[in-house]
Amino acid sequence: MWAESAKRELQTIAPAMLTTDVKTLAVQRDERLVNERLLALLSGCFAGLALLLAGIGVYGVVTYSVTQRTAELGLRIALGAQRAGLLWLVVRGTLTLLIVATMLGVTAAFMTSSVLSSFLFGIQPAEPWVYIGTVAVLTGIGLLSTVGPTLRAMRIDPVETLRWQ
Image (cartoon, rainbow, N blue to C red; front, side, top):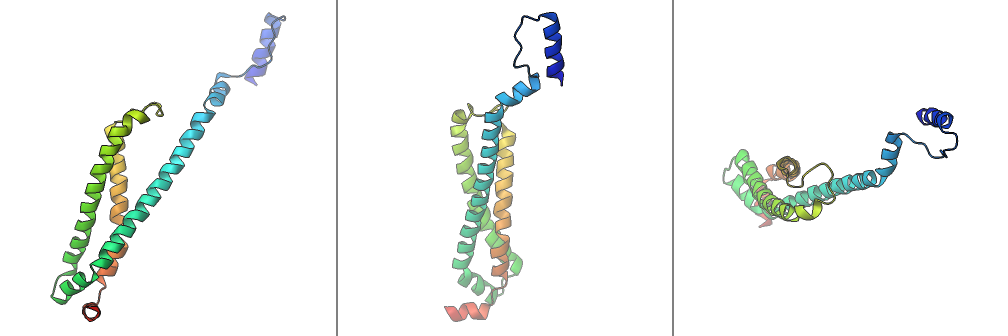
């Protein structure tokens, strides 16, 4: 609409001027940014997939760890350990794993941030809120992934555990 009226006005002022492709600035901007928007969308999708895989991996490691410690947890229950103490034991192991993994991940991300700076628009790669947000999300996923294995560990029957030994 605006482009057509601008084209008509230009034809009345300078009829000899060739005006074939008149576009608004917003349309030109959108056409030029289509590749960057596609890259941002794909990056977001791959980031979500990586987050899902990280959550599944942490869940698998925690489940394996709790399964390996079933005999120990059953023996602790048989000897009178409180369930809250067992909960803290499992969560503490998961937190230790998360802290080590987070430190390694943040160090690797900080070291590769100079490479990534050419892909980022309007954001510096080493901004603290990016690292804080990522650590918070991954820690939350890690702690949520401990819920299932920990609840299963809480329901361990000490007699069955000791019988398997």
